[in-house]
Length: 294
Image 1: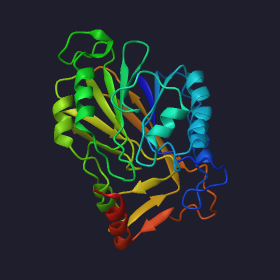
Image 2: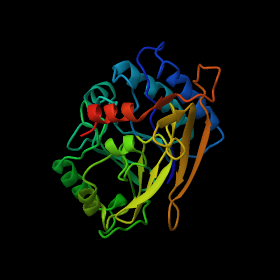
Image 3: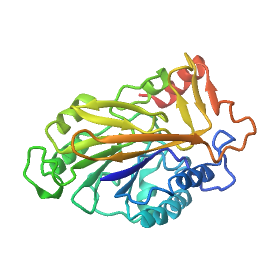
């Protein structure tokens, strides 16, 4: 499989709305996709959550109005994951979906050629952190008991294998804010994934590139489209830049191959593009974690 990995578009139903009073998120998404016009062959496009900022039906229709023609042009299957800013029920009522699992957003998306994308909804209504219910883990175990393409059990990858797509990365966050809003239950999830045909886990949420592993399976976190977080040089502040990023993921023999590009944000409405989109001090970070954390 060759996958274009996108995340965190934060679209609005109101075309005049701006993210942090600055970023035109629709223009940011369109501008980023234009950068990938030269990519002529894709098997799948995976959007790993926070598709919407306001959770409105209009924002989800806009997402699909933009992504579906792009996916069709590339011959790609489209899979969209729910994030903490999304409203899963609204998305499910607005967009016609295929077979669903235990929640409106737990489902299997088949990719021509034998691979598949398993979508998990890690969002918690009204919160920023991620959580998977026991019923979701049971459903995931049942799905993964048979490898993609219906091959023998035991992690067969000959038919392209499985991609797990989940908004909250199964990795400990790199900053105080992100650690307060990360995914819980990593040991339980690892127990389900071990020995399966999952080739890679794709996530968003952190708004910056990050790699790691769970149960020996690579995890890739893609930069955000609406902004890109600086997890290293911002010190005790939480800071993001007016940039947009995306990744190409190729499932080949051996380890997956991932390449990431980051561009100036096409939706930036501020003349001083070098100024942070936001710069939260320690007190603001604490307040956000208290309001949206566990």
